[in-house]
Every structure is written in C-alpha cells, then in structure tokens.
Amino acid sequence: MNAVILESTITCPHCKHAETETMPTDACWYFYECKSCGTLLKPKPGDCCVFCSYGSVKCPPIQQQGSCCGG
Image 1 (cartoon, helix red, strand yellow):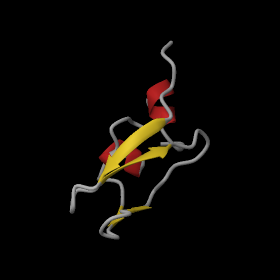
Image 2: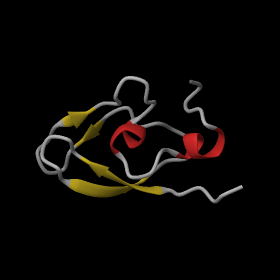
Image 3: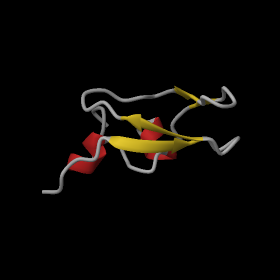
C-alpha cells in the first residue's frame, strides 16, 4: 500500500493562483476561497471535495480506498 500524500496544490480555475494546503484525513473541504481573487471554489460534479476537483493530489480517502466522505 502506498503512503498517503497530505499536501495538495489547489489551482484556482479563474485566476490560476496556486496554493499548497495540507489536507485533513478526517474531513472533506467542500468549499475553498481562493487566496488571490476570492472566488469560492466548490467540487465539480462527481467529485467529493475541492482537492479532487482542483488539487494536484486527490484527498486522502480517495487515495486510500477510492471513496470519500461516505460517498
């Protein structure tokens, strides 16, 4: 089993600002406010969280077993 990566770089689709964040292992981030332009990011349809939609690495539950937040 591969080690879980806990850092992911979220890239805003509006202004292209990238910010590296540490992902929680016990919760999902459904919303993320871009630190550059203030756009509120939400998961894309079919994704469980903002890391899965806009991050360089998918969230820890997806990395581990392929489903997230009870989904």
